[in-house]
Image (tube, rainbow, N blue to C red):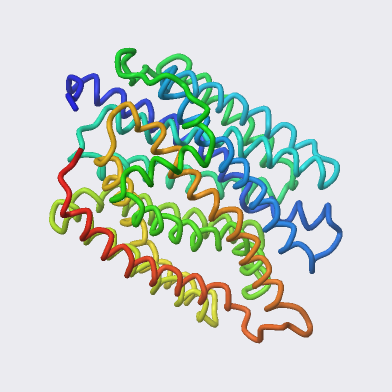
Length: 411
């Protein structure tokens, strides 16, 4: 791939990172209060874990169905219009959730959020368009850092607003998504040249057709499994973390928002500052395995932590988990052509969405079975220990998958 001129590439990277920052910040704002709003609307604290897991799975189901479509549309019409339309839709969705009078309205909001959030496929494809193959791990690390920065400011602001009202963070999220749309409308340039675009095809755009791309490149299949396991473990946090923090440590919206902000800061430091130097020294494969290994250690320590302070301490080794995602993405993008980058990101998002469907339901059920007056599972941190085992398995598979990758020349 021929890289664009340096000043233009630098400006394009800045534009996409700011857009991603505002987009993710709008999502982060609602994290500390969404489970509490679900609990309020359901009227039952015992069913809140299952409802929250169901809503996360519903969001992921929409990602599974729509990500390949959006990725293929971006391969056909360019990244810019797809990103802008999705961000505008997300702003309208947050208004809907702010007004939701019952769980059915909230469910509709999660469906729309899953559809509009599928624009992340175009964000990653955008980065692949404007960076050379050897710089993609660092580029994806920068996107990860922008996401993390959004989760620093978002949950912190959401925690503060959540003390005022469970609805206030949704209105703030709608405003930030609207700001992201306006910013992108004015300054976000197109990254995919017309001559490099691919005709839209429902055969490729449906989720099963998109996954076929991974099978058509056998060296990608094993990494797709690692990607699935990473997503599966990561959805532990969206499914049960807020409830777990309240039940075990007595943390409210403000404390949870502050902690999530700290998680974002650590992840931003790892992906924004460490990924590039570590990959340069160790290579993509080893960096990926190291990240997955530290993630397994960190999550296990979180589940075993008897006090809040020890839980916070476990966040530091867990933060190195952030080394894994950019390197997986980098290894995979080097195996497909420029015109297939959107389809690849759609397939990757579909893999993550499958994990997002089954993982929250699974961890929600595990958590519900570990709390209450007569829990089926005697240990409240059981879900964290299971997630740690999943990541350990991903590290072992990633080591073998990465070694196979090293034996192939980039396409």
